[in-house]
Every structure is written in structure tokens, then in C-alpha cells.
Image (cartoon, rainbow, N blue to C red; front, side):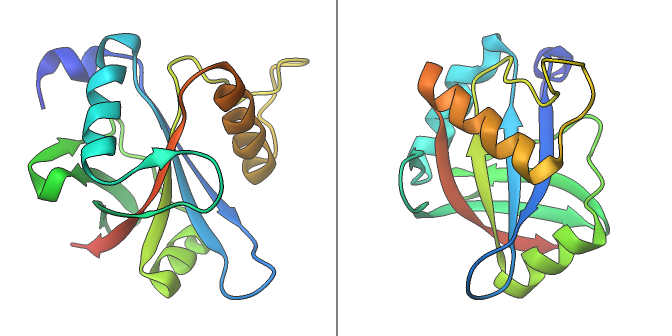
Length: 153
């Protein structure tokens, strides 16, 4: 990854969504700076992501974990790598949900998508906050989603 991409504002937010049936769902919400957003969308689309409406499609993307840390997200058969800086630590609940399903729901949101409560600046409840932020972002721009296989290194 280039130094330029590393200097762009990036948000990687992890949440666990309980399901009516089956194990919980591990989610990763990703926003990069405006300069790199179009490239991230292109890689996501080339990997099978679709507009975030309805059920997420299976993609060829892969979330790579190194212990408790999200190491990178691979797109386009591993030819494109997006690495969070700093690498977010996944909670034990998130790691368990990802391992049980063998995949992660990845949601690519527009730059500037807020992950804090606009009323008081305090962090929102994670699952609720990220879901509402993604919904708000979808109403304002392009939000893509897809499931990515989990790889442990």
C-alpha cells in the first residue's frame, strides 16, 4: 500500500449483529478518504459487491485476521489489498461470530460517514450506530455490501 493511501482518513468499524436464526453476523464497515473512495468501490464491485439493498451477495473478497487484529481486506482474487492503519482489534464476540460463519459482512460506506452520535458526540451503541450510519449513507450516496471469506494467519 502506498504512503499516500495510508495518509487518507480511514474508518474501520466492527460490529456483531444478532440473527433471528443461526449464529450472529460479524460486520465490518469501511470508509476511506475521498481520494481513494472510487478505487475502493471499483475493487469491491470487481469482487462481487452490490448496492446495499437486501441480502448481501457472496463475494470473492477475503478478510484476513492476524490474532485479534484485522490485518487486511483482499479484493479481486487477492490482487488488491486494503490495510487498516491502525489495525482494529476485533472483540472476542466478533471473532467468534466470524469464525462460526467463516465469513464477514463487509459494508463500504462513503467518506465522512459518522460513527458517533451527532447529538452529543459520544459513541453510539456499535451495532445500532453502524446500521443507522450505513442506512443514512445509503440514502445520501453509494453503499456497497458483500460477504467476505475469513482467513486466519
